[in-house]
Length: 381
Image (cartoon, rainbow, N blue to C red; front, side, top):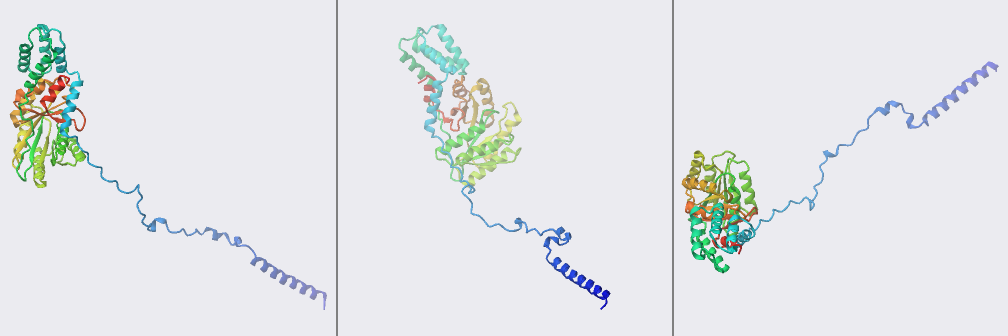
């Protein structure tokens, strides 16, 4: 065999062996050697968690709905006037100072009586009642005074109590026929505290066992209805109100209508404050009363007077009494007032009794007026 033939066979063998080796090597290469185009395929994301409905969990203690707050228990009427007496006794109001100075005087001469009379007038006791008190005391104690302070104090107590007049009927007229509530209207000028007084009176009546409904007929002041609602929620009294600017007579009518339906004992109607000099507003107040009486009698019209306004309060009271036939007075800001004599003056002016007095800013600081407690407080007893 020629040399060329052997060389050719050798070349063929080498090529075949090389091909075999190359194929074996390619089969053993790692997966990372796969062409890079596979790396561009985005992995398939699992479905979002929101698409699966979570299992219901039992509410924790923190998530449990809060219980409704317990209703407040208003203070009983009997203890309220006692607090007024204490406040009057501890205050240095003008009337109390005048009485104290008179009792402490070593000699009741003309100058002492003149000073006493001036102080009584400045305390808004009024000219007539002041003259009566001074003349009566001078007759009892004598121009030169008395050596017995007990006698002087008792004389002062008796004469002052007579001026306040303990014989007046100061109870609220809440009598009503079956199926018809008693209706109480609260009236007065701006800023005397009518809405607050309605709220406090509601508490007082609840403490006496009455069922009460509020009528928010002050539709001119945006916050009045909400204020009254808040007062009622504290003691379980509902409030009937209308839209801001609604007809006050319509709201009052709806309140009384609701009172008839629910069978409550008393409907307390709050009215908007108004200047006594504004004839149109005063006429509107008369309209409210007339509309209410289509359903039920208005058993009380309570005029709220700020005790610190003095003679101006008397002028207001006269006009209101002509329009709505005031049956009783509520004196606010009486405790610590230098104008304690307004109790006597306003009663004389209108010939109607003071029935309630405001003792302060507390929620239960409204009390039935007690002449004896009032005089004792003024005398520091």
